[in-house]
Length: 486
Image 1 (cartoon, rainbow, N blue to C red):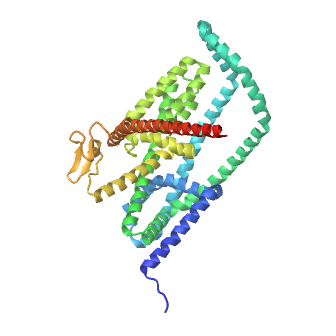
Image 2: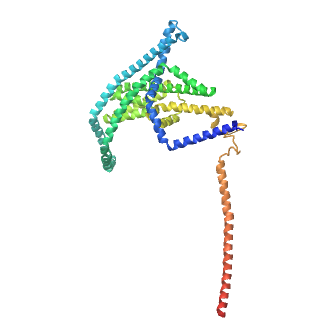
Image 3: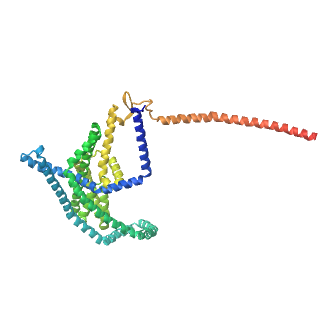
C-alpha cells in the first residue's frame, strides 16, 4: 500500500523546507556578507549606464508630456484627427518620435546654454582667485594683525596656540603628507579615469533614455501586467497605487526644488551685482547649487561665500551673509511654499532625519532624494497603520491618541479621566509601584528574619562552646587518672 501524504503533511514538509532554506541563506549572508556586497556593487556598476538612462528619461518625462499634450496633440486635433482611435496608431508613433527628438534637443540646448554662460564666468572667477590668492592672504593677515594688536590678551592666546601646535603640524606634514605624494598622484589619475568613465556612462545613458522615452507606456504596461499576474488584485492595486504616489512625490519635490534653486540663484546674482559683491556669478552658482539640498544647503553655500569674501573684504562677507539670510527667509516662507507646496507632508524633524540618514548612506545624491524617499516610506507606514486600526475598529486620527490613557471596550479614556485601574495608575508607574513593594518586602525580611537567624546562630555557638568545654574537662580527668595508675 502506497503512502499518500495529505494536505497537512504537505504543508508541514513545505514549511520545513522553507525554514531550512531561510536558515541556509541567513548563514551564507552572515558569513559571506562582503562577497554579496561586492557582487551587488559589481552588478550596479555594470547596470550604471542603464540606471543613468532611466534617471535621465524620468527627469525629461514631464517635458515630453508637455510637448505632446500642449503642442503636437492640439495641432492634430485642430485638423480633425483623433489620435486616440486605433487607426491612427502609426501617427501616434511618429508624434512620439518627434516629441523625443524635441525633448532631447531642448535638454541639450539648456545644458549648452548653461555651460556657455556659466563655465567661462566660473573659470574666470577661479583663475582670478588663484592669481590674487597671495594678495588675499596678505589682506586677511593685515585684518588679523590689526585685531590682535587691539586685543593683547587674544594675541597672547593665539601665539601660545601657534607655538604649541606648529611643531605638531610640521611633524604630521613630514610624516604623512610628503610620503603619500605618490598616492595622491595615483588618486588624481584614477579620478581622471573615473571622469572619462562617467562621460561614457552619460553617452550610453542618453541612448537608453531615448529608448525609454519612446516606449515608456509599454514598460509601464508590462510592469502592471506582472503585478496583476503574480499578486492578488487588492495587493496589485495597492502596489501600483504606492508607485503612483511615489512618482507624484518625487516629481513634485525634485522638479520643484530644481526650479526653486534656479530662482534663488538668479535672485542672489542680481542682489550681489547691486551690492557690488565680488565674484557674483561664482557665489550665486554655489548658492543655487547648494540650495538643492533641503535645510542644510543654504548654510553650506553661505559658509563657502563668507570664507571667500573674508579674505577680500570682511565687510562684504557680512553683507553677503545678511543677504543670504534674507533670501532664505523669502524662500522658506514665500517662494518655497508656492513652488513645492506640501509635496512631502513631512515635518522639519523628519526632513533633517531623512537628510542625515540618506546623505550618510548615499552621499550627495542622498541629500536630494532622501526627503521624497523617506516621505514615501512614512506614507506607506501610515497607510498600513491606518488599515490595521480600521480592522480593529479604532480611531485613525493621531489627535485621538495624544491624551489617551488606555483603550477598553468603552472606548478611549483620556489621562484626565483615568483612575487607578489595571490599565493606568495616576502619578505613579505600576512597575515602579511593584518595585517599591518588593523593596519593602525585602526590607521587612531583612529586619525580621536575618536578626532571628543571627541570634539563633549565636545561641548555637554558645551551646556548642559549653559542650566542648565539658568534653575537654572529662578528657583531662581521664588523662590524670591514667597518669596516677601508671
